[in-house]
Length: 116
Length: 116
Image 1: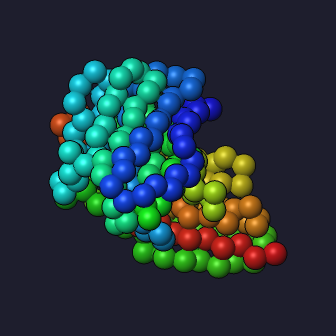
Image 2: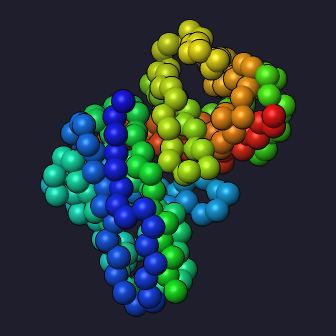
Protein backbone atom coordinates (compact mmCIF):
# COMPACT_ATOMS: atom_id res chain seq x y z
CA UNK A 1 0.00 0.00 0.00
CA UNK A 2 0.91 3.65 -0.23
CA UNK A 3 3.35 4.85 2.40
CA UNK A 4 3.66 8.32 3.83
CA UNK A 5 6.46 9.19 6.21
CA UNK A 6 6.60 12.05 8.62
CA UNK A 7 9.60 13.44 10.44
CA UNK A 8 10.22 13.98 13.27
CA UNK A 9 7.84 11.72 15.16
CA UNK A 10 8.31 13.71 18.35
CA UNK A 11 9.76 17.12 19.01
CA UNK A 12 10.10 19.24 22.10
CA UNK A 13 10.98 22.87 21.62
CA UNK A 14 11.13 26.02 23.64
CA UNK A 15 8.56 28.73 23.36
CA UNK A 16 9.45 31.23 20.64
CA UNK A 17 11.37 28.83 18.44
CA UNK A 18 10.27 27.41 15.10
CA UNK A 19 9.79 23.78 14.22
CA UNK A 20 9.69 22.18 10.80
CA UNK A 21 7.82 18.95 10.11
CA UNK A 22 8.38 17.00 6.91
CA UNK A 23 5.87 14.84 5.12
CA UNK A 24 6.93 12.54 2.29
CA UNK A 25 5.03 10.19 0.06
CA UNK A 26 7.46 7.33 -0.43
CA UNK A 27 6.02 5.26 -3.23
CA UNK A 28 3.65 7.52 -5.10
CA UNK A 29 3.40 11.07 -6.32
CA UNK A 30 1.04 13.13 -4.24
CA UNK A 31 -1.08 15.57 -6.17
CA UNK A 32 -2.32 17.01 -2.94
CA UNK A 33 -1.10 16.94 0.63
CA UNK A 34 -3.06 17.83 3.71
CA UNK A 35 -2.08 18.92 7.19
CA UNK A 36 -4.22 18.12 10.20
CA UNK A 37 -4.08 18.79 13.87
CA UNK A 38 -5.53 16.42 16.43
CA UNK A 39 -6.18 17.16 20.07
CA UNK A 40 -6.39 14.30 22.58
CA UNK A 41 -9.45 12.14 22.10
CA UNK A 42 -10.75 14.35 19.34
CA UNK A 43 -11.18 14.09 15.62
CA UNK A 44 -8.81 15.45 13.02
CA UNK A 45 -8.98 19.13 12.27
CA UNK A 46 -7.89 20.08 8.78
CA UNK A 47 -5.45 22.97 8.82
CA UNK A 48 -4.56 23.37 5.18
CA UNK A 49 -4.46 21.77 1.77
CA UNK A 50 -1.43 22.07 -0.43
CA UNK A 51 -0.81 21.32 -4.07
CA UNK A 52 2.66 21.03 -5.49
CA UNK A 53 3.99 24.32 -6.73
CA UNK A 54 1.16 26.47 -5.49
CA UNK A 55 0.23 28.24 -2.30
CA UNK A 56 -1.51 26.29 0.38
CA UNK A 57 -5.19 26.81 1.07
CA UNK A 58 -5.77 27.35 4.76
CA UNK A 59 -8.92 26.55 6.65
CA UNK A 60 -10.78 29.31 8.40
CA UNK A 61 -9.17 30.26 11.65
CA UNK A 62 -5.73 28.85 10.82
CA UNK A 63 -3.03 31.50 10.79
CA UNK A 64 -1.05 31.16 7.61
CA UNK A 65 1.83 33.22 8.95
CA UNK A 66 2.15 30.94 11.92
CA UNK A 67 1.79 27.64 10.11
CA UNK A 68 3.91 27.91 6.99
CA UNK A 69 3.37 25.21 4.42
CA UNK A 70 5.63 24.47 1.51
CA UNK A 71 4.88 21.81 -1.09
CA UNK A 72 8.12 21.79 -3.02
CA UNK A 73 7.67 18.59 -4.96
CA UNK A 74 5.15 15.85 -5.64
CA UNK A 75 6.58 13.85 -2.77
CA UNK A 76 7.42 16.43 -0.12
CA UNK A 77 5.49 18.94 1.92
CA UNK A 78 6.68 20.75 5.01
CA UNK A 79 4.85 22.45 7.85
CA UNK A 80 6.75 25.03 9.87
CA UNK A 81 5.29 26.16 13.16
CA UNK A 82 6.78 29.59 13.66
CA UNK A 83 7.33 31.19 17.05
CA UNK A 84 5.78 28.22 18.76
CA UNK A 85 3.86 28.64 21.98
CA UNK A 86 2.60 26.06 24.47
CA UNK A 87 -0.87 26.23 22.96
CA UNK A 88 0.61 24.94 19.69
CA UNK A 89 1.44 21.67 21.42
CA UNK A 90 -0.52 19.01 19.59
CA UNK A 91 -0.40 15.98 17.33
CA UNK A 92 0.17 17.06 13.75
CA UNK A 93 -0.66 14.63 10.97
CA UNK A 94 -0.07 14.91 7.26
CA UNK A 95 -1.73 12.98 4.50
CA UNK A 96 -1.16 12.60 0.80
CA UNK A 97 -3.48 11.80 -2.03
CA UNK A 98 -2.42 10.29 -5.36
CA UNK A 99 -5.10 12.07 -7.32
CA UNK A 100 -8.09 14.35 -7.27
CA UNK A 101 -11.75 13.52 -7.29
CA UNK A 102 -12.45 11.45 -4.21
CA UNK A 103 -9.17 9.60 -3.92
CA UNK A 104 -8.31 8.18 -0.54
CA UNK A 105 -5.76 9.96 1.59
CA UNK A 106 -2.81 8.09 3.04
CA UNK A 107 -1.66 9.32 6.39
CA UNK A 108 1.72 9.78 7.94
CA UNK A 109 2.42 8.50 11.44
CA UNK A 110 2.06 11.95 12.96
CA UNK A 111 4.33 14.31 14.88
CA UNK A 112 3.84 14.99 18.56
CA UNK A 113 4.90 18.59 19.21
CA UNK A 114 5.45 19.78 22.75
CA UNK A 115 6.28 23.42 23.33
CA UNK A 116 7.70 24.21 26.74
CA UNK B 1 -23.99 21.21 4.74
CA UNK B 2 -21.57 18.31 4.62
CA UNK B 3 -21.49 16.40 7.84
CA UNK B 4 -20.56 13.01 9.26
CA UNK B 5 -22.08 11.74 12.46
CA UNK B 6 -20.70 8.87 14.48
CA UNK B 7 -23.09 8.74 17.38
CA UNK B 8 -21.23 6.02 19.24
CA UNK B 9 -18.41 7.61 21.21
CA UNK B 10 -17.10 4.42 22.78
CA UNK B 11 -17.93 0.77 22.42
CA UNK B 12 -16.58 -2.06 24.55
CA UNK B 13 -16.89 -5.68 23.56
CA UNK B 14 -15.34 -8.96 24.52
CA UNK B 15 -13.23 -10.83 22.04
CA UNK B 16 -15.13 -12.82 19.42
CA UNK B 17 -18.16 -10.62 19.64
CA UNK B 18 -19.42 -8.93 16.50
CA UNK B 19 -19.60 -5.15 16.61
CA UNK B 20 -21.12 -2.56 14.28
CA UNK B 21 -19.91 1.01 14.10
CA UNK B 22 -22.48 3.45 12.80
CA UNK B 23 -21.88 6.30 10.39
CA UNK B 24 -24.50 8.71 9.08
CA UNK B 25 -23.64 11.40 6.59
CA UNK B 26 -25.17 14.50 5.06
CA UNK B 27 -24.19 15.90 1.70
CA UNK B 28 -25.65 17.99 -1.07
CA UNK B 29 -23.44 16.33 -3.68
CA UNK B 30 -24.78 13.64 -5.98
CA UNK B 31 -21.31 12.22 -6.44
CA UNK B 32 -19.38 11.62 -3.28
CA UNK B 33 -17.07 9.17 -1.59
CA UNK B 34 -17.14 7.62 1.84
CA UNK B 35 -14.22 6.27 3.79
CA UNK B 36 -13.36 4.41 6.94
CA UNK B 37 -10.05 4.83 8.72
CA UNK B 38 -8.61 3.07 11.75
CA UNK B 39 -6.40 4.90 14.25
CA UNK B 40 -4.68 2.46 16.61
CA UNK B 41 -2.97 3.67 19.79
CA UNK B 42 0.20 4.34 17.80
CA UNK B 43 -1.63 7.25 16.17
CA UNK B 44 -1.21 6.51 12.48
CA UNK B 45 -4.45 6.44 10.53
CA UNK B 46 -4.88 3.36 8.39
CA UNK B 47 -7.07 3.46 5.32
CA UNK B 48 -9.71 0.72 5.35
CA UNK B 49 -12.16 1.38 2.55
CA UNK B 50 -13.37 3.88 -0.03
CA UNK B 51 -16.84 3.68 -1.50
CA UNK B 52 -18.36 5.91 -4.16
CA UNK B 53 -21.94 7.06 -4.08
CA UNK B 54 -22.96 4.99 -7.09
CA UNK B 55 -21.87 1.69 -5.65
CA UNK B 56 -24.24 0.45 -2.99
CA UNK B 57 -22.95 -3.08 -2.94
CA UNK B 58 -21.88 -4.27 0.43
CA UNK B 59 -18.21 -4.97 0.82
CA UNK B 60 -16.55 -7.73 2.77
CA UNK B 61 -12.86 -7.99 3.52
CA UNK B 62 -11.98 -10.76 5.91
CA UNK B 63 -13.64 -10.00 9.23
CA UNK B 64 -14.61 -6.52 8.07
CA UNK B 65 -17.78 -5.66 6.23
CA UNK B 66 -19.46 -2.44 5.22
CA UNK B 67 -23.11 -1.70 4.60
CA UNK B 68 -23.79 1.36 2.45
CA UNK B 69 -27.41 2.50 2.27
CA UNK B 70 -28.15 5.71 0.43
CA UNK B 71 -31.78 5.63 1.52
CA UNK B 72 -30.73 6.19 5.11
CA UNK B 73 -27.44 8.00 4.34
CA UNK B 74 -25.54 5.45 6.32
CA UNK B 75 -22.26 3.65 5.84
CA UNK B 76 -21.92 1.24 8.72
CA UNK B 77 -18.91 -0.90 9.51
CA UNK B 78 -19.10 -4.33 11.09
CA UNK B 79 -16.24 -6.30 12.60
CA UNK B 80 -17.01 -9.97 12.95
CA UNK B 81 -15.39 -12.03 15.69
CA UNK B 82 -13.56 -9.04 17.11
CA UNK B 83 -10.00 -9.34 18.34
CA UNK B 84 -7.95 -7.34 20.81
CA UNK B 85 -5.94 -5.93 17.89
CA UNK B 86 -9.11 -4.30 16.62
CA UNK B 87 -8.99 -1.90 19.56
CA UNK B 88 -8.64 1.54 18.02
CA UNK B 89 -10.52 4.68 17.14
CA UNK B 90 -12.42 4.33 13.90
CA UNK B 91 -13.26 7.34 11.78
CA UNK B 92 -15.83 7.59 9.05
CA UNK B 93 -15.20 10.33 6.49
CA UNK B 94 -16.95 11.98 3.56
CA UNK B 95 -15.27 13.58 0.59
CA UNK B 96 -15.87 17.25 -0.06
CA UNK B 97 -15.42 17.67 -3.78
CA UNK B 98 -16.41 21.31 -3.88
CA UNK B 99 -13.89 23.73 -5.34
CA UNK B 100 -11.72 20.76 -6.35
CA UNK B 101 -10.37 20.57 -2.84
CA UNK B 102 -10.77 16.86 -2.18
CA UNK B 103 -11.04 17.50 1.52
CA UNK B 104 -12.25 14.85 3.89
CA UNK B 105 -14.91 15.61 6.44
CA UNK B 106 -14.36 13.36 9.43
CA UNK B 107 -16.78 12.16 12.00
CA UNK B 108 -15.85 12.42 15.63
CA UNK B 109 -14.72 8.83 15.74
CA UNK B 110 -15.77 5.75 17.68
CA UNK B 111 -13.35 4.30 20.19
CA UNK B 112 -13.58 0.53 20.15
CA UNK B 113 -12.14 -1.46 23.02
CA UNK B 114 -11.96 -5.21 22.64
CA UNK B 115 -11.27 -7.06 25.86
CA UNK B 116 -9.77 -10.55 25.98
